[in-house]
Length: 329
Image (cartoon, rainbow, N blue to C red; front, side, top):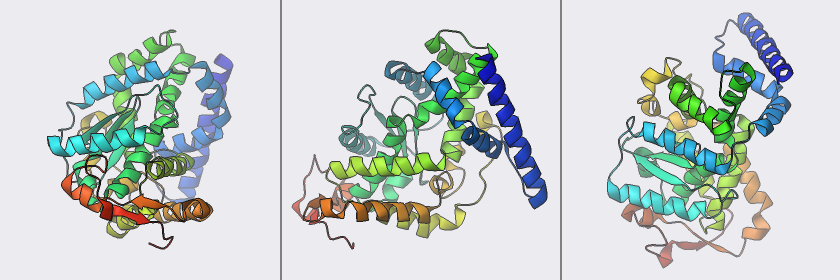
């Protein structure tokens, strides 16, 4: 492990040095997140070895998620019970399609008018009230919630925490017991937890992980009977309203000081932590093209009225919301 640790540190330093040189040539600003991004990509194979050595079970991830949710309850206020109940019901419908059945998902609606959503380990899914109000239908909201569920199902959330645990184990600073190590990060290293939560919310994941979550979330929603083209619609609406904010830098101040406000730090924060929306729309259109033969001739649920009434299609099935797939909506 010491050998792996030396290689990892060396790789990060080399990547950091390269970025600094590039930054000097372009007179641009290079932040720690950019250094970590290149270092992580360059050491992807090493990460996989480390993740195998520090594998977190579903039960351990659930415990970690509960710990985070307990802390987060003091950071953000909850939305009204009707809205919260509606999102929970919709989330449960989508979570029935996950691969990792050992994770029990919990859905939280935060009382904020801003448009954002994020996932934390252990199936803790957070949706802002503003995103629910922004969506035009239940199918559009299902695509976003499905995307966040996919980040958990594909282990993207826990791997960020595993990466930190791996570094601490290499350094010999964390307990040898795995779940004890996770508790160390939370209890003894509250700043580390806040930093990682801050990173997930503001920076998102690597681009290939975001696209994987898009595709997997789309499959959950479509398998549940929701309109396959809703993903393109919600992405286009987000781009129309917030597209000019996508490339703006996010705040880089102390995460502990900002953790309560980071989710509402600026309009369009959901887009700012994801790949360019035009690329995501292209990817969704490619999925629709590839799956057209499977989708043609089938009917799917839109759910515009369901969203207005805050009653899912399971609670209030509306025949008028069922429409045949046309391929051009």
